[in-house]
Amino acid sequence: MHYERLGRTALKVSRLCLGTLNFGVRTTKDDSFALMDEALEQGINFFDTANHYGWQVHRGMTEELVGEWFASGGGRRDKVVLGTKVFCPMSDWPNDQGLSARHIIASCDASLRRLRTDWIDLFQMHGVDPTAGWDEVWQAMETLLHQGKIRYVGSSNFPGWNMVSAQEAANRRNFLGIVSEQCIYNLVDRQVEREVIPAARAYGVGVVAWSPLHGGLLGGALRKLGEGTAVKSAQGRAVVAMSTYREAVERYEEFCLDRGLDPAETALAWVLSRPAVTSAVIGPRTRAHLDGSLRALGSDLSEDTLREVEALFLPPAPTVG
Image (cartoon, rainbow, N blue to C red; front, side, top):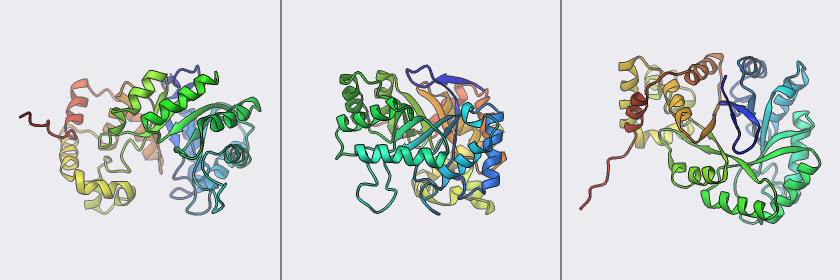
């Protein structure tokens, strides 16, 4: 396993981050435990969750499941760099969401109880709250840091401007501020290359890429749909994007077939090859999915092959008149 510093910190995280979005929802508790055990055994030390994951059953369920796994012993908690998130509504009450100081602190305490741990390594803001000033946000984060409840603060789904304004406010307080930005990044969605990644590189913020397969679209979706074996790629983000990118996906799957490449592993290898990416969030439902991600990490795809893959999804160059 390869490890990288998380942004400008000295914290070392694995290049694959185990995402837990499926745990307890699409994956049973026993299978989720087995995946966490195997990930840790393979050297994946970076786990990501969120306070509202499991909302299909009840908000907080996934954190509870991860906490039960931690409680089963074996030094699990000490080995894991744990990230969770705050922002999304946890109930219908007005103060049970967003980035007010009240909600940040209350949400952290609730996550700690569900996760059965004394500290969160990476406490991530799951979105921008336009009603919360950065002095209020950073005051709350400083309180949690001084109490020993969190170690670092990250952002997720932040536009570049908000990253800059947040970090400048932290700098004025002599606070470390944002050390990572978790954003969607894959062959289909490269919007973060415009402003988010330049901002991250300028401020020493680690980029953690989520949805490297764009909800399964890049994992052989057309073949699976044809075979009737599609699960994730038959719903959500993948289905919405298919109407726009069908021709590109067809070319991509043909490209992989001609060269004996696995589409999912190739797409993940491309994300991991991007110079700004510290880690990529994977969301395996099965051991086979996890094994495929590990193979992508050890991929020996050439620079030429990666450029060819990338070119399949690039729009034609504009005509200069």
